[in-house]
Image 1 (cartoon, rainbow, N blue to C red):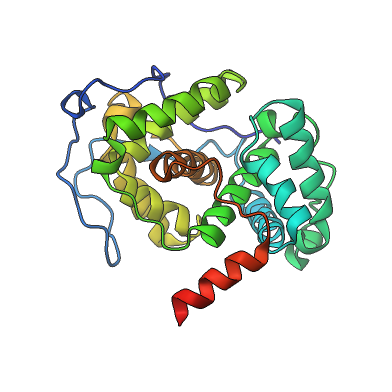
Image 2 (cartoon, rainbow, N blue to C red):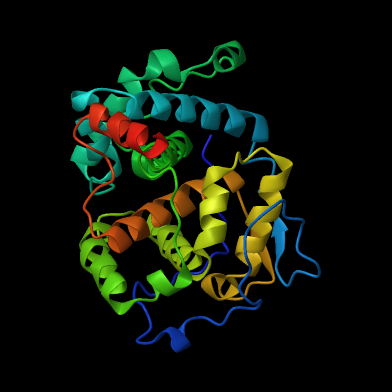
Amino acid sequence: MRRFLPALLPSLVFAFPATAQESPPSTNPDIVVSGRLSMPQNPQTTILPPPAVIFDVESATLFEDASRRAAMCATRGGPRRLAQLRDVVDGVFATPRQERAQDRMVWTTSTCGEGAAVRAHGVSMVGQVNVRADSASYPGILYRGAFIIETLRAFAPNLALTREQLADPVVQQRFLMREDARASKRLPNDLRFFRTTICMVREQPELAIRLVQTNPVEQSTAAVQAHLIERTRGCTGYQKQLVVDPFQLRAFVADALYRWTLAVRDVDTLIPTQRASVDRNKARSVN
């Protein structure tokens, strides 16, 4: 079954304003994201769930769980698997090389990716992520998002970004130089949603990080999502209503967050060449 992000999200120009003052105006002042968030009071944008005929939350939850398990296996692998993960996460999306890499990664992590609940439900991830899955299928989008989310969790566990960092013209230029060419390969809907979440992360990076770090089925996640959408209304054309699939929104926000992180850190990837170096760095931080 195919599922999509909200069709109401508008297409945005893939460029940044010349100055921070020209950014889409925020409808709320900056907030410090700490503690448990409640739903926004008197929101100007109403968030609606996708129609039941195209969205089944139980199946989406199972897909998300399987993709998360597979991604965790990928980030814990040796040098060869980490190299494959770089092809998936840092490759140019919608190109044959990147899509074959994702397909191969799904197959090689399938034994730990499919939990008992998925098998009992009769939904098999393997075979549903094919050459075109990265750009066209719901499982492919969730897998792509999961590989990015687990990469951030494993290799940037204490990630913190600010609006000031993302408003830096040097950082924005790095971002554009890297992503302009990469974005040209994305399919139209994929590119449109990516552009929207680029803007959302730029305007509210703290909320974006929190959304990526939460479980999409938890009740508290709905509040984080609502605050992110409400505080970045300029990124969605000030729509009064948005139909949102929380699983896909989280995947696209993670994608944009990862690209911004690379630009801020001025690196090509967060994925190391071998896992041992990551473990040693963690040990040093503990000691």
